[in-house]
Image (cartoon, rainbow, N blue to C red):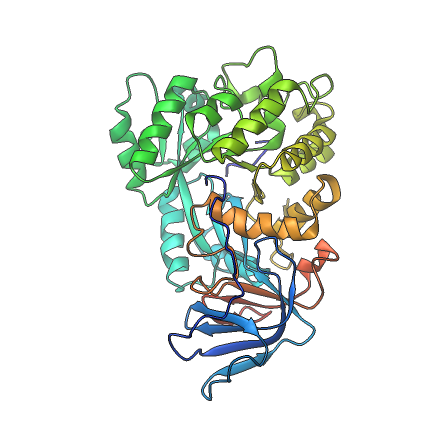
Length: 442
């Protein structure tokens, strides 16, 4: 499992997501008397009805402004709050469970905990593609799953055991989802093979120079794939990635290398930056954020795994990593950089005894870190975990906001999350593709 220590800016703003459209068909489900937090960052709207027709939202309108269809099921949500389904934009599923049978309860626990979509950010795509097919067709009670194909320099595949595990049975560096890239690589063919796995994006991981990052990004976009990278790819810098046009850069701590005197050729130094002497507001970092805002590059902050590493394995990360990471994420937010919510985990808490299927998804904790340490309001943290995470995945047309025509992926809460971000944990039930998911997962 690729665990941590290890799209463009939203230019189409929904002018009126709560307008009253003409219903194309009678809705099958009405959620009435709800307070709607639509994921766009606009204030909550009380006393609203959400009409759902099959798997999609048909309309959102003030209570009583339209007649109730006789055949519709009505759920009275008086005193309850509705947010879009949460999206974990950085998950690693494979390796999280000891065998295939364990993935069903794992994914069901994530769905029950409010996560209705996720992106797997590198692993064994043979398994992930199968899980995605089952989840995205609703054959499996699960968040919808999207996934990437990884590319890195040849030396990465020699150094990293995880790559061997994820491509077992294939020549190392030649699996379509785990490819070693060099100056002699046929890049159009490599990208086509990656796309053939079912991946919707490339992940440019490590040990790649700037010129290859630029070539891979251009070809991926030409073939309709998005591009995610580590914030520093070694030796390619954060500025190299942004200038290449990548869609998202991951891991706030790796931004420190934007202002470092030199950047190593090898990724193994990635979490050992000089957090004590390089300021989060160094001119190079401020310039980087200005470029990210201009290009629409999203920051995938992933704060929680670094906090866990600093708390339990402090020698594996640079001193001062968490205060620095909080400060640089706060500055990025203040500078207008879009920030998604990803956990860089299996999505659930795990310890030496395995995954805790009774725990809420770690998405809730990552959102709380944004509020408690990075200057986000609860409303902004919800937007990061819904609209921005959907944008990072290239899914804005389908999900991420409570908008007519989008998938009916919703979380119904018993307390107001705009007053306290921890209230996203107080889940009454979840709706995925128009179907109510109860606390027991039924």
